[in-house]
Length: 161
Length: 169
Image (cartoon, rainbow over all chains, first blue to last red):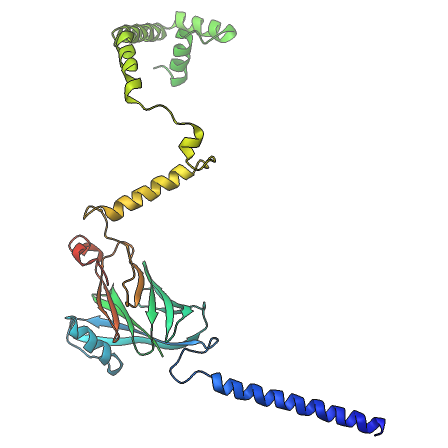
């Protein structure tokens, strides 16, 4: 075997080894990949939808986007004649990042994912003098309300998507 | 009408605090002014009255009797090591921290006696609400389950009326 042939076969062997290692890595990744609905990927952002609503006792309109909250509140004895969506935003936040929406009373509603859990996130929320930490899961809205505004009340719905 | 400064100087003169040129100048002014003479006389009378009142104060032997009874009521002063309790000297602000902690604990354990509603609600097992601080506003957790978490902040003026609703979770 000439020197050139030996060099070619060595290079081919190394390439085959690299390909083999890459294939094995991909297979292992498939095997240990999280199933759908399992814990969120470590670096995936938290997707939020935040909706600001204004409620009044006076008979008026209940926006279609507010019907779910309207039903939830009515079941708890809080019945409003008018429930209008003032603002609606969707955000994607990494851990520690802060999302904010301005409410009509001039205060900021801020939310920040602090930690990642099995199925959701620990989220810090502050709105005016109120603050809290909440375990949030997709599809379970966090509803905070009661701030007065022009004879009505403001409600904010934060939901993890 | 005498100036405030002159009255102050007359008091200092009466107390023997003026010397030299200032004393000489003030004595001349007193001699020339009946009003200043009356003021000096008034200061003298005031001093005499104060001395008379001081003489009528409780006799020293009464205080002595009290002092004599004190040692049986006061425990002996602890050594520095006993006082600190840890074998080293605590910093001066440690007392303030301990006092603040004691006040906070007293507020927490006081049954219905806290002047303001509880501000921070502890986490309830299985609850989405891990911490809730509403400042001085009362709040009600209307719902906290797998369907939704709903928190209603009550108006501040209802703080006293809504105290029973402050407990969350």
